[in-house]
Amino acid sequence: MSSQEMVRHVLEGEYLYMLMIRARRSVAQDDTPFAGRAYTTIEDEIEFARPYRQEFESLVSSIPAEDLTAVTIDRPDAGYKRQLGDFVLRVAYHEAVHCGQLLGYLRTMGADRPGIWD
Image (spheres, helix red, strand yellow):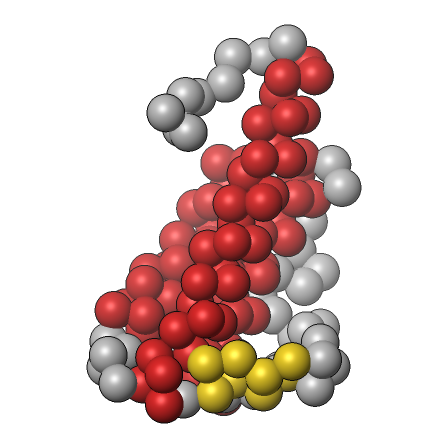
């Protein structure tokens, strides 16, 4: 993926994870607000995704503690069922993996990189 494609992938993925948390199962991945949207700038991608990010944060912060172990997310298309708490951690893991990839891209280009891991 290009840097732009990866940013879109992460932002759209977070939107899809939000839908899966609500539905407690897999959802169609081809019908999102991001589908068919032209690439512009990274800043524009982030601004476009901002309300969905806020909605996701609100959803996660409203999860009762007991639901983290009592609720299961069923993803037969991905071959797993996970407790909600594990599923939420998967979102963070997914974003961290791609953050590392983007930092690798910046390193390869010789660009300045933020010191986020220290």
